[in-house]
Length: 343
Ligand SMILES: Nc1ncnc2c1ncn2[C@@H]1O[C@H](COP(=O)(O)OP(=O)(O)OP(=O)(O)O)[C@@H](O)[C@H]1O
Ligand SMILES: [Mg+2]
Image 1: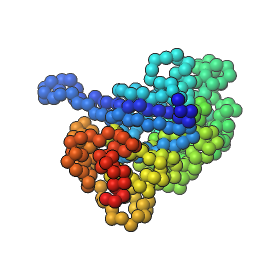
Image 2: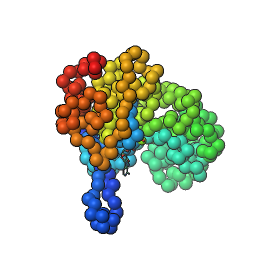
Image 3: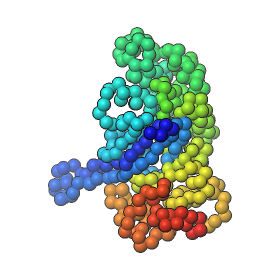
Image 4: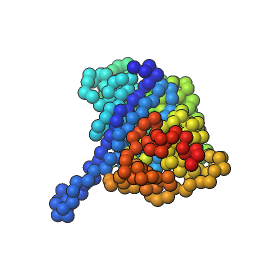
């Protein structure tokens, strides 16, 4: 086993049944319909690194994220944390420990915090849920400490730049950026080594975004955390990510080190994404605007899923699904690794 490797996803898939209700299906003679939200994804995250994931709305980023932290069961495939399968039946204490080690931060700090709980109770709930306090876990420990204000709570609040006295307040007394800090403190409460951040700053003002991203970076350095960071914003991945994976219609089309991806995209979809942000690529090359809408994931096109929008598609792209090979899923890139730089 690779000692640097913390998380590994193997051929992960998630299918949703999006059929009409049974009766209307029978009346309209409609077949059942399935949507492949994540359709065979492999990746790994090493200790201390940040894997950025980008892709258009609906490409399956959040579905992937929820599977990777164990909130959503995959239809197929595996998630391994230090070699332990997250979804395999096993010893309950091993499973609990694996879950303790991974946390998630969501886009909307308003919705992800219980408005009726004091901040202290919100932040240290995972401490009780995972039985990390002296005095045991669960209801008993909670009853002996009803306000949920512990030394550890204060420590966590300080760690994210808040005041320990904030533990007595309610979420509505804070700004959006402060609320995201509370969510981060809560995520840190169980001493995780892996955090999935799904659009952690997209609901925040630009100036606040930078503060939260800096906080996440500082915490990473201080605590040795690994992140998966999902975002629409390429400037955010460039600032944060060690490597970047580009998703399209439930699959990765390219994974590369961040600098390489920005300097030399190998998949035409990656280049389209980079071209959509004028100040990031200063190559002086004529831009290829992205044409068309993403295809319907219930009824994806044959061949390469990107072919209807690709300026370079050849016959083969319309017939044959390109495998994800050598970190890219493109027939043209497989034939010639540098093709896109010259195209
Ligand atoms: N519970 C569900 N039932 C049915 N379809 C779903 C469900 N959850 C997600 N989907 C579908 O799966 C696909 C991927 O959704 P997902 O939320 O993972 O995309 P995303 O990349 O996170 O998008 P966004 O950038 O808008 O957050 C979409 O087509 C979505 O409609
Ligand atoms: Mg999402």
